[in-house]
Structure formats: C-alpha cells, structure tokens
Length: 232
Image (cartoon, rainbow, N blue to C red):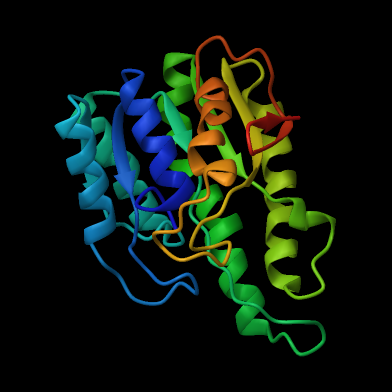
C-alpha cells in the first residue's frame, strides 16, 4: 500500500484539504507486493482535484533507489520544492518462524526499511538546503512481536532505528522525523478494500500525520500510536 488506498489515501486527502500540494505515490501492487496498477493513485488525485486541491500521481517503486529519486524529483519538478515526506509504503506476507524464508524477510525489508531509507535519502538534500523539512515514518505495534509474521515485525522495528538516526541528523537542520503506529480497518489489516468501520476509519489516524507534518510540530524522533480517535 502507499497513498492510493486505506490510510495513505486518508493522509493524502487531508494534507491536500489543508493546502498541501501532494504527490500521490502508489505502485498499485497487491498487499504481498506483486503487480502494479496506476488506478489507485489516479483515483486519489482525481478526488483531490475535484475537491479543489492540487495533486499528481506517481507509480514509482520506492524499494528501488533510482525510482525513489525519481519520486522526489517529481515533487520538485511539479511544485518547486519539497517540505513533507510521508513514508507509508508497505507489504505484508504472513509467515511464522521458523517456516518463514529469507525471501519473505527480504521483501519486507526492501519496502518498509529500504523504501523509507531511499525516499528520505533522496529528499534530504532538498530539506537540508532549505533548512526545513518534516518526515513521517510508519511503524506498527507489531514491533513488540508478531507470532504470525516475523518479517513484518522485524521490518517495522528497523524503521524505528532509521527514524531515530535521521532525527539526530536533522536536529540542526530544521528537519523533524517522527513515527506513527497506525491502527485502522483497511485492506492491509485484512478488511475488504471497501470495508466501512467508522470506529476504525483511516480518517481517524490522518490528523496525527498532518500534525507531525506541520511546521508547528514540536517533536522529533518520537513514536505515536493512532487509531479510533485516540493518540498516544
């Protein structure tokens, strides 16, 4: 998933409503990371523009460093600068230990950890040069341990180390880097693509990301759980 469905879509739409010009990145793959479809990102862009916002679609695979560079370049090309990076791309392939194999682990690390590294690394020179930036990473309560998905939990733990390191690097450059651990009923969570659960809507997660992406964000290197209207 990226910004074309579920939680990422809620982020993109709220940020656009608040005045951000948004690059909606989504490979359009299955939850396991297979395939590609331009449709989800295009649909979100259409919804944003219909509501009077500004957005462009992007289908690059963030696990590829060259593609991640192209994604950031698209933001700069279309809008002249980049201020916010939200890393929400992720896959999930259920497998228990010790049955889980190395391909399963590698796939999770490639998207969750390396994807977040690639996009942050591509955006960093722009943020550092302007002395300002906001990066929001995505972890999960799964980092405490998932008996049914060792690789996912491992990757989400890795993103924490990456975020804390970037927060340290960005402290003197005006770049705040934080983590969100979201909870909502989405395709990735096992619900159908059109599932409607008002109490666990992605729209109840998005405000925390918008706040962490705002110029008034007072923290860096922190983890926030968000779901069902509760933030902690």
